[in-house]
Image (cartoon, rainbow, N blue to C red; front, side):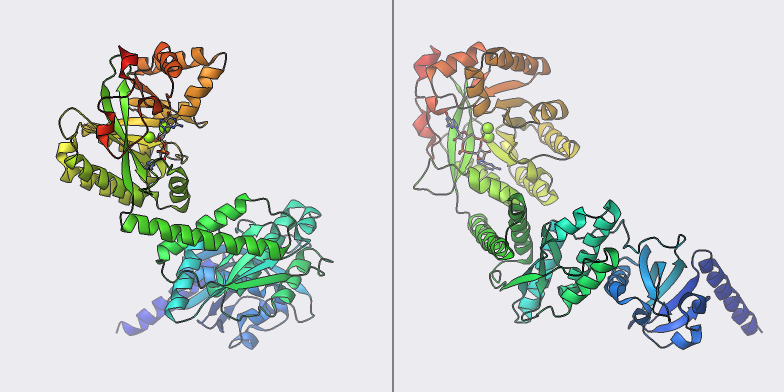
Length: 552
Ligand code: C2E
Ligand code: MG
Ligand code: MG
């Protein structure tokens, strides 16, 4: 009894949905997974000259102008990823050979691709790709996708290649166009290169005229030049004489790295290449720079990974001294990577770890090592504390925060005896997150110090947003204050400000009796510097404290 009614209802529903879809589009299509048209509704003949029934069973992409076929394929791929995409502009071919601009929206459901097409309102406007669409993936997204593809190919026994494509004259061409067309040209280049890359998503912009893309071994990228020329000349007629140059190299340097470390290495390499001024250089020299940078970055990451995993680093201690009495207030724990060179600064390694995104793993390993050492040292009595450096980068990584909290919970005896110094070598972006982290430590009786004050431009911003117990004035700022005419006034004002905020001050790099007298006059509470010994693995080196007489 109910059967016919159900059929009626579903037909009614279908008609209703089609009618609703027509509220936006003039033409509706359903495609199967292969892009074959299985349904078409709307006045197709008026658009292209072909009747709806004629196109059933054909490929939708065959209706699209050849200059836009890649744009459409990329749109289709992205819709599958994101389920829905709107307002892509493409051109359809008319039977007469002319083209017609349409806006497309796509929806992916149950292995079917639904398309609604709408005639562009204003005739005669230049056909453009969607303005809101980014031309290339950012470096991070590219590195993640490339890292995944490289690992997949490696698992299949293949060695992927990285092709560096130069399009000399592209910059000049874009300069000669209005802003909209200039953007559209870059977006077309992005789409064409992405479409030729592995997975359709592994292309990256290196300079304004140089691009990198991951490709299958031996792929000669045939057809890329003609597709690119067609896409560009559709936006900028007369620009068809652009030449491509290409260099490719096998990426067989990453087999021993995890996907994550490989991604970090690619990001780090591209970041350092993009910082260099390569504008106008030949593709061959740019590609040499890129490949050298990738190989250097992966080797740096490999070494740093080994340092972390095998705990191949050491702890050196340097005392922080109460300026009034000369008592050691606590020791700063500084990492060292070569036991035979105890005075070699780790700074370069640390900044590399920050830029490559694995310093947080090191910071946890260092904290664990310091705690283990602290348990064994002769300073293991209630009198001394040790401070541990934390990169601002690490605080933004939840795995680091969890691991540090777990470590501290396992060692509750460290409460009141460990301090943490937040270093400024990495620009902190989310001050709220950092302040929450700091307050969590302080609630658990760990004092927190803002390190490197005065070394960067953001020190006062950090001091105002972060509630800390101590500010450590960077050695360079102490030195500059001694040299500059207004230095004394500035440093005194800073220590007064800190005193008002209830924050103690440490002056760093105090290496002469004169600098000790200077920072004392300026009101600093504590000092640290070579005047009282260089960092050492043996805390006994500071008993008795060198130059203790300067406090008497
Ligand atoms: P920092 O935290 O500001 O550490 C103080 C630096 O000043 C140390 O350099 C120390 O050796 C140096 N120093 C102290 N007194 C004097 C002096 O009188 N003259 C001169 N010229 N230098 C002095 P070091 O050990 O080379 O460390 C450099 C930086 O590396 C540290 O600066 C810190 O930012 C970073 N670092 C060290 N260990 C770690 C760590 O475990 N984790 C993180 N994230 N960073 C660390
Ligand atoms: Mg420090
Ligand atoms: Mg410092």
